[in-house]
Length: 499
Image (spheres, rainbow, N blue to C red):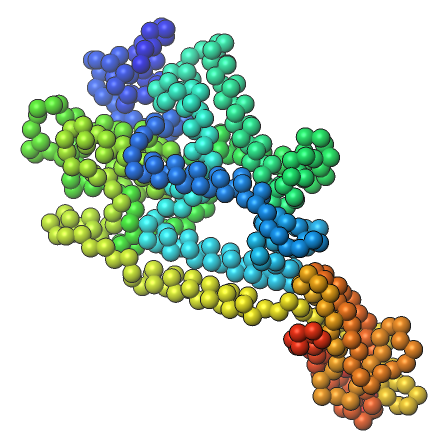
């Protein structure tokens, strides 16, 4: 790295990175200084390897799902939206491919959140912060933004050199170009987000023509801004200072959790190594600092498991590159458990205990919740009813002495065609009258429920005085689907005189 344009070469090297070989060349007579980790701006270096490939694959898959999923169509009939995944606040419905979740079924969403939490607990107890390293949205978008930054400004040394330079046309052009691309990605992210709540083709047409509603523009702007700030500016600060998960994960790890670990029993004592020198009496670590130069949060993994480590494994790829160059075995840094580290120090074989009480508990809870949700969903009906008794009057005593109560029935019909229901009160000699009827009827009335909606029906129930056993008695409403024979029930109370 050339820094001839900077007047004071020694001062410039100190301002850049004392661990870089180029910076060391301008300090030939000074002792090598241990870099300060976690202080100042982090400049991650690009790296190649197995875990970097996994991260690129995860990034491509998750971004493709996020940006393309709103465009997937799903035929639900002529009156229903055809977007596969849609959180429809107008219809008060959540559409997930062939599944429709109504407001009364919000417990399904709660169940999904519980499953996600249990899956995260299980993954963390097995593999540490694997979620943070590969699947967290902050990680995915930060990786994307850092790729753009490298494409425009160059790798670690080039970016450090650029930041150290005084402002000029070339620097301004690169910085402006980088932030313009960042802002474009952020706008695409905000636009994709609002598509999950509106028809995607309609939103694409309305956003640039200012035809979308104020709520749509608000959330479009909100997610554009947060994506730009969090992925472009905050980066590792979100993982280390803003996110609560690093503080929680410590309670989920044990001696058998596989986490990114430095094998100090093999690497120490560390120190520089020249080609041809003997490896006797020293460790494999040559103190090159490449492990933290590639770390997106600036962690020196040789200091042990730390709060800032997101478990991405890029330090493993960087260390493997160095081990190949110095002709030493790979995986000086690797996924390992504390128990295996202790066993290997004693010369014993590694033991992998994936199934243990902690993981068995999380797995069993996950399976139980999943089976319960699957069972309740499979057995759920296309119809439901809520019965609300009229608050006033409490009851009406008719001229023949019989007692009448009024009820409002909210019939939910999730089918995409009209359904007809016979409404009755179980095990009571009741008469019925619907609003609009001229006289009572002894047979159960049949009401129609509109498709894919909630239909309100007001019904009077009349019981003989002899059937009313007190001022308040339980009654069960029974709705039978005339076409399918399916029966749904709902309880309520019937009011009468106290004596």
